[in-house]
Image 1 (cartoon, rainbow, N blue to C red):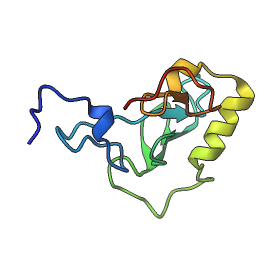
Image 2 (cartoon, rainbow, N blue to C red; image 1 turned 90 degrees about the vertical axis):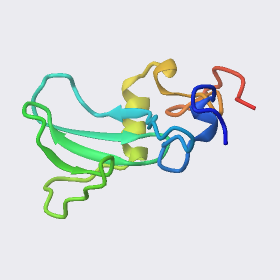
Image 3 (cartoon, one colour; image 1 turned 180 degrees about the vertical axis):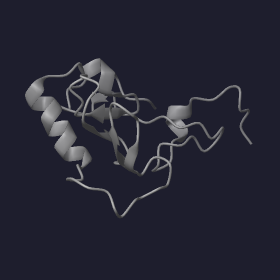
Image 4 (cartoon, rainbow, N blue to C red; image 1 turned 60 degrees about the horizontal axis):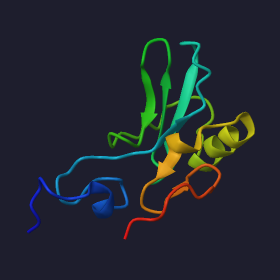
Length: 118
């Protein structure tokens, strides 16, 4: 068993972005928020595809794949990670913020930023 204090979590992520050694979660979150503090916000992990929607002013959750809840009575359109990423491509983004340290590429536009982990 590998020592929990000396490992690189990014080399041990499962398909839900959870480290298989220590259990920490490392999502790469993108949102369609306009930062007004009002209205519905759709969020997605660009790495695993988990999505959620919440009310920006109150934090009330419409649905969330992040905590295992999937409310069937949510209202409004359910965004996918691809739709949120496309919105970021059109609106502009900071590649470093969406860096996938495993591949070394931006998860929004695919630009290579660093050498991949080995």
